[in-house]
Length: 124
Image (cartoon, rainbow, N blue to C red):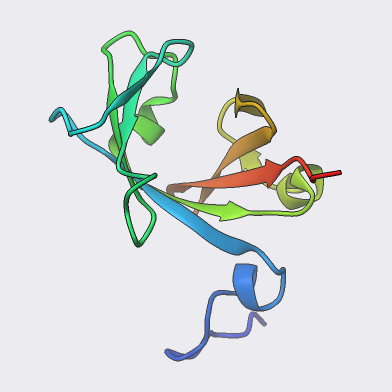
């Protein structure tokens, strides 16, 4: 029987697996100040670098190759130590990617919503 989490407890991803909250990505149709264009993925991103709480806005072009579920439903992102271990037994949305130097990401489907895992290259 699965243990039911109490109101005051953090989710198991944090309390037991050591994942760290990174950001929440929210799709929008409205242009936002300071947008950056990610040509490979055909979408604009903004807010992450200035939001105290890790809010990231995402505005997609009609022909963006990003999965429709990511374009419609907000996602939460966690930093993980080992991306491959984090995705074991999970339903991937697309392939593992590297949207910027030193970072690898994977999106999974959890309880009907997208969740992003980020692995950052360790400094030497």
